[in-house]
Every structure is written in structure tokens, then in C-alpha cells.
Length: 303
Image 1 (cartoon, rainbow, N blue to C red):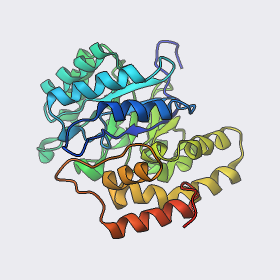
Image 2 (tube, rainbow, N blue to C red):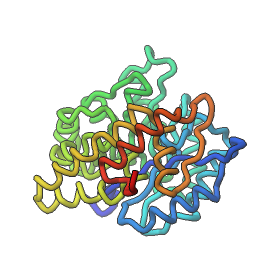
Image 3 (cartoon, rainbow, N blue to C red):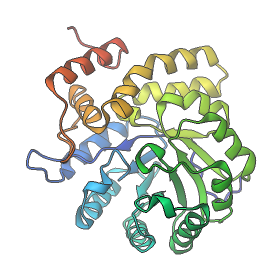
Image 4 (cartoon, rainbow, N blue to C red):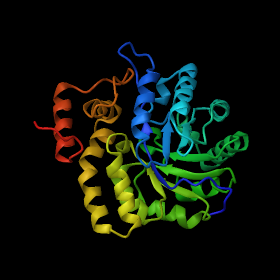
């Protein structure tokens, strides 16, 4: 990899945006959560990603979150800002704002509202326009569960020809496609697993790290999976990967952001409520979540 390309290797929590009981952005809680996570050897953070409830924030709140995060993230950890909007112009504007605030890179989710018209050619033009306008590197974000669009390896390879597009966070879970992306792109292009559910398989196919919701509540375990892999300790990496699957499922595709925030509260960081229309977990789900956390030894307390 050339020295000019920002190196992404490592683990990134996509940090939730905390809200108080009145539904306002709680920047003090965000600061405290980041100070806690700063104790770990994380490569950086995704701010305003899917877990950051980007789509539920207004323009002022988005900048407020970015400014608070930048102040709490040390210079040796990357701040990657989620800036994907439904129009190219809005994405460019938020990208430029994030750069001014001090983001090291941006993570750009593809537009999806007019899904039927989001052809490879349209997406190529969109991402290249954003990359042309961005003063900082661009990372593609593939999240078919939310957008209904799964960027193919071939489409990613075409988009990746832009020199300011340095990688992708792929949350689709198709490890064969991860291998194809590594095969079809140049060596400077970096792939990040978009979920802890397939971190180890993704690493084995050439991913350089992961953007993992699980890393908000189990950062040590996520880091250990990658460290074991890098040391060739595959059995240990696999055992830990398997141990974390139920927890990861609960706070991602199972119960989503509300469960992640509830787990953070259980672990003495601040999760707080999600923003409507998302609802907090029911008491029954909270009980189930606590059992899952205990069984995976993420939550260590007596019943």
C-alpha cells in the first residue's frame, strides 16, 4: 500500500448517538462513551453511521455530534463520519462539513429511495462526484439490509478506480464477494467487514478489519478475534467468533439499535433511548438480552 493512502487496518465501533429522556442529543454522554472506548486499541470510530441514527438527525444535530466526537477522539484514532444522504448535493455538503470539523475520512452509504433507478452507472457517477468534491478520503458503505441495494463486486471495482475512494464497509455478509472485491480492486483498496458476525471469515478473505456494532459493548473481544487471526491462532479466533455470535445477532439484525443502547446501559456506559420511531426494548426483551450477555461473558454479574 502506498504511503499516500490512509490505512484503515483495525476495529471501529460505529458509535450510537445518545439522546436524553427528552429526545435531545446528549453530547456529554457521547464524550463519556468515547473516553471509555479510547482505553482500547481501536483504530478509530464511525460517527453518524447506521447505529448513530444519522437519518433521524437534523442538519444542526449532525454537526453537533461530529463536533463533540472530534473533541473526544484522540489524534491517534481515526474519526470516520457517515455522510451518505439521498442526494449527491446533500452528501457533498455534509462531507465538506465533516472535513471542516476534522473528520479523517467519510463513510458514504448509497442513495436508495429511488431504488429502481440506482443502476451501477448512476451510483458510479454519484460516488465519483462525492469523491471529487471531498477534501478527505471516501469509504463506500454497502448496507443492503437497509437500502435494498447490494453493490456487486464488479460495481465496487468500477467505483474504486477513483483515487479518493480508498475502501468499503460491506455489511452484506457475503464473504465470497469480499474475496472478489479484493481480486478485482488494486492493492490499495481496503475492505472492512460490516458486522462482527462474519469478522473472522472476512479477515480470511482479505478484509483489513471491521466496523462492528459489537465493539461498542465488547471491544476487547472484537480486538482479540483480529489479533488471534493475525498471529495465526485460528482456533482461538474461531472460538471467540462463535462465542460472540448470539450477542452480535441481538444488537444488530435481531433487535437493532434499541438493543445496542440497552446493552450499553447494562454495561455502565450510556445507551439511553433510541429516537422515534424506534422504540426501547420491552421488559421481556431486556431480560433475554441480559441472559445473552451473561452467557457470552460480556456481562459479568451474578443473576
